[in-house]
Image 1 (cartoon, helix red, strand yellow):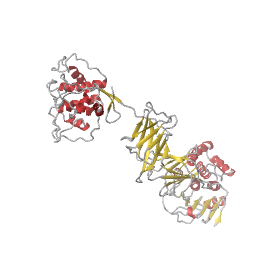
Image 2 (cartoon, helix red, strand yellow):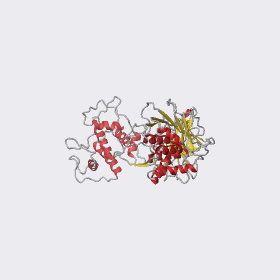
Image 3 (cartoon, helix red, strand yellow):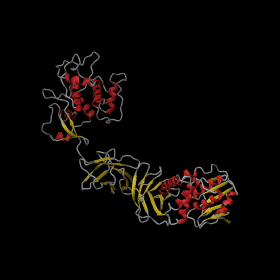
Image 4 (tube, one colour):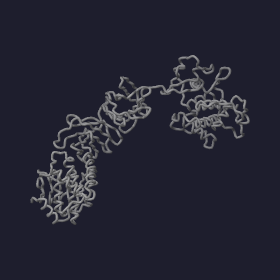
Length: 626
């Protein structure tokens, strides 16, 4: 083996051709960018030169290497290593003898036929700069940029102990070689800030950012987690984004270890935040071994109001929960809220100081699993900074809002009995009575007054008819329509089909109601597609407002009873009587002698005939004391 100076190395390179330049395993900026700069210089001398397509190249350095990486697998005449201290660091697949090694490590094992070694240099980039000057007489701006990155990354942006006065002189010289020194310096500074402070874990789960070596592994198997993005921030905290194939999961936890690059000593009490593709979030500080395992049993919410925790149940099954805390009215995320989960799975949220929780400042807690699926029926305790405590269970959307306040609605009476005090539940509903019900409901909803008509809407509805105002009012909204003969026929019984059609038209004008009572619609075999009301019946059945008979029929031409109408309208409006309140026998409650408590429609009829305030925050509604 022959030892070469920088000048002798340049002469040797000038005397050969067809180069493959090899970087070391788990390549960093020095081995990659020094090799790329050398490749550029050789090409300027008319040589064929390529850099090895290193299988462990990270996305951080790929943009710098793409112009120089070999395009095929054909053998090259001369193989040169850059910044490789021993044969064990040569990537697999490099089978040719190493003709020349360019290195700065004093421990170089002298495996190559020729060695150009500068043991006093802080980086291989310093040595390559001298070689290129001897080979080409100068450096291009691109070569200067590559070598500046090489020197900077190997010295930790000039913060490591290997940084010397010569290192700074080399950095200054590299910028002077650039075409526009000031612009180049700024551009390189911005690039180096990103390179220095952000990296992607390699196949060993390792990444270097700043002064730190960050190792990301699977907690149970200790397998490395590659392609995690690691960022070092100005406040000396770390953030890690897990690769797309990995989630924050209490059943498959992730461990982060932080060491100092210079001596591999653990970094204690360093704040780390970890996120994944579903924006789950865990955070914490490294322990005495420089390690943090996520997710854990407690956390604090981030700026999005999220924190991910886990727990193990009595059967040994592990569960992962992401808790989001926000202001109910404004939907503003609440950061810095403490989240913990007990042995029984109860979630405790502790609001930060200064965060109000009262009837005017309600808090919503949303709980999902790591796949963003809502978790229903989980116990949640929310603690305020003034000692107040609220608790409850998550609903079907995984949400709980505290404190619980009444959501009051006014449910006006929309039906009355007859002058003899009876209700007539089994009597057929008249078309005039149906119009009256829907007109009352719609006018209550819209806050409008029903005035007596000055002209007739239908020839058979005189202006002085008791129901004329109601029919006229509904006609304005397209709810009440007549027959093909132009008449309304108010005194005739309304059929099931006619009432259903009127209900659907009413709902279009009313604009609210319970649309999710039934998910599926089963066809009535006796309602053919050609029936004039088929579309209305299908729509109403889908919403659960009407149901058929046990034999699968709807019987559209049958008359509909007053009791049936009450049940349909209540379902349409999502109204349900408070049976406990009614059973208490309050004064002023409207009852009918022909509707005993045993009647099948008893509660629906009382819901329809009693004006009341109802708390609809729960199910069923709760009537308020008068």
